[in-house]
Length: 358
Image (tube, rainbow, N blue to C red; front, side):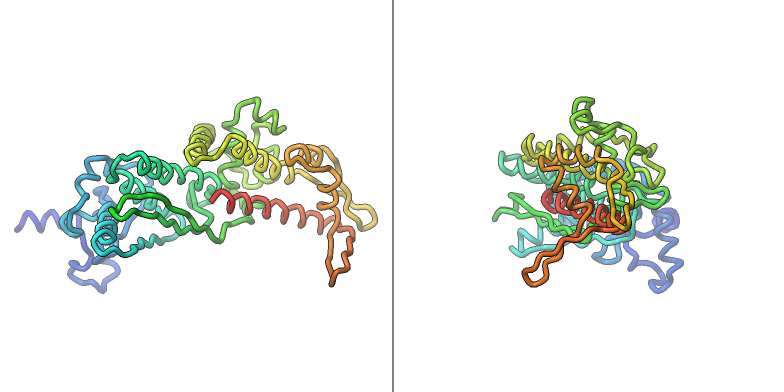
C-alpha cells in the first residue's frame, strides 16, 4: 500500500476523478505536471482523455503498444489515445452504431497528431486484405497531403492546422475500413496573401520551392528562394530548422500518388501553386486613377501555366464586371482596388484547389 502511495506521489493518478479534491484546479494541474515529467502525456477524466503535447517523439505508438490496447477494457490499461480508438471501434462493431471521436484544443495542443494516431491504430488492427490494405494506406497517406496544403508555421506551432476538418471513415459489416471522406471548413485563406512576422504561408509553397527538381522549377519558371515571392517572404521565416521542406515534398508527392492522383493532376496542382506565387509578384501602377501593370512578365507566365489567354488575365486584374439585371458593365479598377482583386483571386484559386483535393 505504501509503495502504491509513493508511486502516486511521483506519477500522479491516471484518472482525475480519483483526485482527493476534484474541484481544485491547482491539484488537477499538479497531477498533469507529475505525469508529464514522467513522459505520461495521457490522463483520463472519466471517459474523456486529456493529452499534453510533449513536442517530441515518444516510443508509445509501436506495434507492441497497439496489441496492448487491442480488445481490452477501457480502464484495464493506462490512459492512451489507442484506448479511446479501440473502445470506439468495439462499440461500433458491438452496437452496430456510428461512433464519433471529438478532438479539441488550442493551437499546438496536438490535435493533428492525435487524429494521425487514431488512423494508425485503425490501420494496424485491420486485416491485410487487398481492398482493406488499399484503404488503410490511403487513410494514412491523406495526412501528409492535408498538412502540406492546410497547415502552416505560426508563432506558436510549426505545424498548425489552419482549417477544421471532419474525417468520416466507413467500415464494412465486420468492422473493416472500406472507405472514407473528409469535410473541411474555415480554411484560413487570408494566409495565402499575408503572414505575420515569424509565420509562414502554407507548407506546400516552401516544399515545392525546396523539393522540386531543377527541371520542374524551370518549367514552372520558379527559383528556390522563397524571398523572391511576395506571398512567401512577408513572415521573414521561410527557413525553419525543425522542418525539412525538401524531404516533405517527396513525401507529399508520393502520398498524392497513393491517393490515386494521376501524374497530369499532380502536375496541374503544382502549376496552380506556381501561378499563385507569380500572381503575388504582380504589381500595379497608376494612370489617372486607373490601375496599370508595372510589367507583363508575371502575367505571361501565368497565362502559360494556366493555359489561358494573356488578355483574359489582364482583364481580370485591371477591370471589374458588374451584372445589373442583365446589363453587364465593365469598369477599370484603381491601383488599390487592383491590389485587393489580385489577393482575392489568389485566395479564391487556393481555396478551390484545397476543396478539390479534400
